[in-house]
Image 1 (cartoon, rainbow, N blue to C red):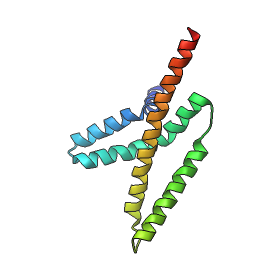
Image 2 (tube, rainbow, N blue to C red):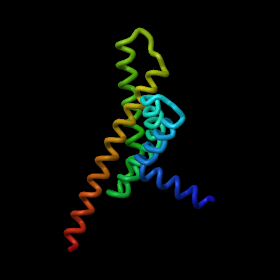
Image 3 (cartoon, rainbow, N blue to C red):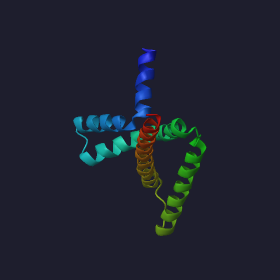
Image 4 (cartoon, helix red, strand yellow):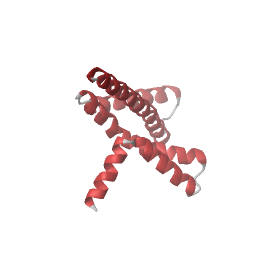
Length: 131
């Protein structure tokens, strides 16, 4: 059972798109409206992407960017909070955190897709050079 759980967690970390699809389909099955199912799936996947992106970069280029990613996330949160503070009279914490979290999903998803594409291209180039 322990090995099975290890395998499932490893697959989810290395393939967060699979986690997104599973959560989205479960959300649709339990009759969550389309936009809410998508939001729930993106929220769960964001947490996974915080591990996947540094891990993928570490595997490809042997660089540890975990701390840099956390600093980037905190900087984005500060910028969003500042903008919210300047545009509204009172900061509403829950919508602000939701906005920050969803923006992190967009940034991390984009980074993950770019890293995967670059990794595939890099592998093809290395293969062609070996042949």
